[in-house]
Length: 383
Image (cartoon, rainbow, N blue to C red; front, side):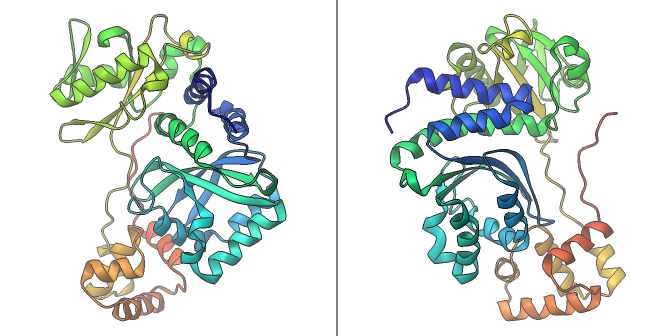
């Protein structure tokens, strides 16, 4: 296919950002992106690597049979995603062609890949990480039919241009728990979210702040309002937000990775995401004259789990408890062995003893048990 026109790219980016405000638009947006790169289906897949739980958040062109086949192999695929989608192999924003990994995943992985793709005539599966946390991944994927040939450098370049915008939209959707922002009750809707949300005009002039943001502004720990202008205590963060807001106002297509996960400093390690609001029929109706919305939140990862309760309950030795703590973080047995400075054989022996003591037989079953005994700590939710 030919190169993507600036107008078409702008339209797609606008559709992606509208999904932040109205998540129900994701299937149509995915369909348009897939059509642009000549793929027959696409999805945003959410993976909980700790619990080996996966779900398709949004899809287009994906049959229920295909989804069922996927979930039949959840445990195996959790291990695959932990390895293949590590930052060393799959940097954020870089499309990964799964066919190029087939020689490295072994016979089991090759058979699973074939059982997914062949019934649909899919010749290639392209996936890229759009949200990365310690125990969670969100992956954007698109599938190419054999009749369209291989995905070319042109299509992968288009994906690279779209991914920063998908990352921003997915991050904000995650902050908002995929809830729609109701335009006719904007103030009440924004106040219902745990994140601090500020709607700003040019130069960071604050047009609206929700309840959480107003508390943050009053404390002046990381952000403040100086003459009605958003100010950040950390100069580097303030510069990064100012640049992102200016780009959001001038040309959202060129904002790229600016304003995604900007660290604001402070003891709570808050971060900010900037959503452009100056374009598109849906977003411009939020607040007139707005340039962007700034979402401020604490990291959503669970805190490291204390294995003392599990060790006491099941009589685990200190070595076994240390091994389990690493496994609960989503590490593989080999990664855990390396981190603890022991052989893989010793690690597997410890794991066998843990299985015996806890009455489990698989890692996924074991981690599910750990989560029942020591639930991960999540952000508090407002009623």
